[in-house]
Image (tube, rainbow, N blue to C red; front, side, top):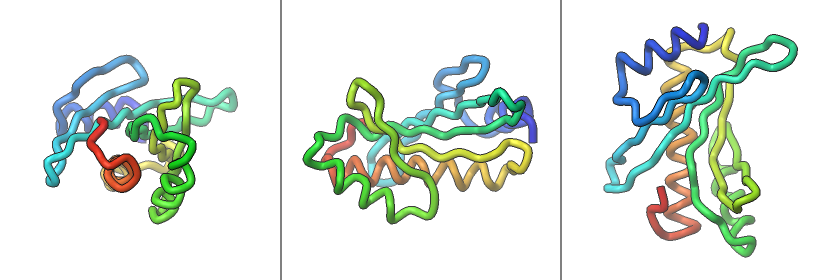
Length: 129
C-alpha cells in the first residue's frame, strides 16, 4: 500500500479534522461518552522505507503515575508510549507501509486509540483528549 492510497481510504471513510501533506488528524467520539484524537503520520526513512505511524494523546502523566501507565500499555498486543519534552504522553503504533492493508489500518488505529483512552481513564481518571 502507498501513502496516497491510505489518504484516499481515510477520505472515503472518515471525517478529517486536520490534514497536512504527511499528517492527518481524526477526532472520535467513543461509545463510553469519551473522545479521542488520532494522528496518522507518513514517514520516509533515509533508506527509502516508508512507514505509517499512529499517535493518540494520553495527557501529561506525572512521574509518580508513569509506571502505572506503562503497565496498562503493556496489556496491549502492540504499540507503546512515548513522551515529549512538554511532558505530554502519547500512545503510538507503526507499520511498514509496503506490507500495510486496510484491515491493518483499522486494527492499529483502534489499538492505539483505545490504549490512550484506557490509560487516560485508569491512570489519570479523566478524559483529557
